[in-house]
Length: 346
Length: 265
Image (cartoon, rainbow over all chains, first blue to last red; front, top):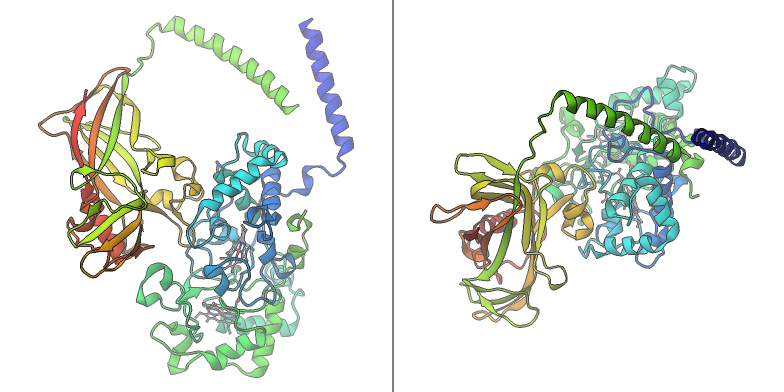
């Protein structure tokens, strides 16, 4: 009897397996998991033993990212400000609309390669990708009740309850689980397939002569700060922007006078897609950015020493050199990233 | 179907381990010693200048030494990393030790029950007011440390260790209004972490017996917040929202709010 039962069981398993395969012609293989590109350094965050990155967890994070249920009046999702065609920055909005407080004064950066970042936001105020969503989700006026409200709303929806339970194997939905899911989605957002990447990996024809000249100029003039394959060293520096009177950057976090007007050195990957530029979106073209470095740099006690070396303010650049650098910056665009169906609204 | 396979293999391995256990027991009949443990209840009894203290939205029940008549409508703080020490120096540290003491009527929590303490006589309790730096830099937490508890700064990552909010009216200059003290800070110049160590008075101890409960009765006198040792008047300092020089002053005072009044064995 027992034997028969077991055989029956195995038969059912085998049968189920076959029918599953037939019903879903696109199996797991479309989800690559988190992969460190061969020419990248080791990541800082790649999931944790408590939050391993899985297809289901990633998909849950994506659903949350695009779902306005996470905002008070159900009008705004992360995707409202972080748009895929702008490498998940906010195209053409100097400062993002939506929430009060700091959000109204800062330019939404792209979401890419967060796995390699040790701090987040222009002032580096956030220290971990898992807690990052708490900032946009809650009002800076510190009501903080809204996380609870979001959990109430999520727990009310059977489809969310099922999906969370599938990933985290427990109910009800907690804020930790929600934050884990967001972190999974964002950690997967790796941009590593631009023409420049191809060049770095050995394909010498990936860049034109002009672009290579631009790269050499960039390496000489910009890469002290926009360094390495990620085009940032993750440090906080004052690049000589005229203070806008609202912000003091890193100093708002540390209260140290020596941090006045320092901002996180941003990655320049996909920079051609993410205008406007700088923390407050003051420049809407790369030409204006280059003009800033050559003519606009303001002196101040915290100006980065690199920008006043040999007694010269700024970075001397000819018009031709600027155009070459801009050509190079365009080679950092990664269409396979911005068009990747994995990251689009499902 | 994975589940089924899992179940089958669990059953299989269970039966294997079961039988192997039996074999082992036959060889070695001495049972593993089970440690005898009990519970200590930590009771946080709040007061103002020795008089009983409760939250209130309207009436000014208390007065500090600068003529500020005051009442609190919110008072919450983190108590973490609780340790009990014996006279011989042995220490029991509660694992995953994070708690919120909360006086809010809808979430009141002023008694902590710490169980699993090895039997013995404990003379000292030690705890941290705040959350250690590790948990401030380790991503999304849960339980008492869940950000949804509202004791968390989102724009500049870190836990709010102490949250006191209320109203005041000053007798001398006629000013009145709200005060909001949110204190934290786990690194850099402006730390708010305080380690508080309290010893049972009169050479006493809390006796932990197997399966039983004793209690330590703590007094928390809020008045110290304004003058022990830093002088802080409410009309002079109405808001603290981030780690800074003022939050450090408040933390130097909240360290001194606590005393261990007596124990029940």
